Image 1 (cartoon, one colour):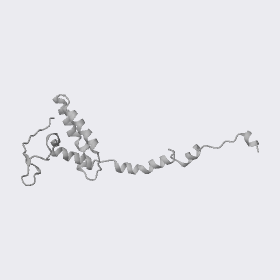
Image 2 (cartoon, one colour; image 1 turned 180 degrees about the horizontal axis):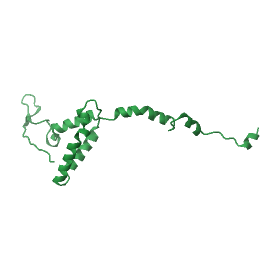
Image 3 (cartoon, helix red, strand yellow; image 1 turned 90 degrees about the vertical axis):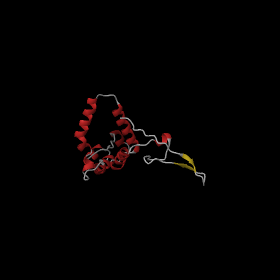
Image 4 (cartoon, rainbow, N blue to C red; image 1 turned 180 degrees about the vertical axis):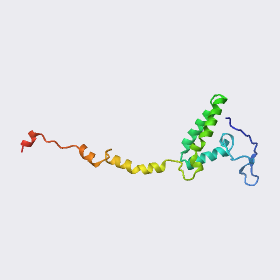
Amino acid sequence: MHPHVRRFAVHIGCCCRCGRRVQGRHPLQTTDALEAASTHLGAQTVALIVLLNKQLGLSHGKIATLLRQLLDVLDAPGTLADSHRLAAHLTTELPALFSFLFDPSLDATNWRAEQALRPAVVNRKVSGGIARHAALETRRPKLIVSPALATVH
């Protein structure tokens, strides 16, 4: 996978009336930035980033890592058969991987499950990891008074 590069020739000058810098813009430009700052992602990639961030709750850092790893996989030397096998696997598993996109009743994250487990986790931490009250009583340290100390007044 190789990036699609476009070069635009835009005029940069000064306004005759106020002297401020003015810059032309090509209809296909998505930003006014020039040189390295003008590097931008395609509309489909931006849509994917928004989906991963808003629907799946991934941070921008995790999304950047994911995209870097995907590009590394796509750019890695391999055979055409490897690419076809990966494409066939993704085609088969797409409904399972992204089922939440097609069924609005499914959650994209496990947030609800984690919230359902939260009271149990809090109770476990508060009780020191002991599930039953009876077990708590048996594990409580007991005060042992030696017979020698019992005879001393």
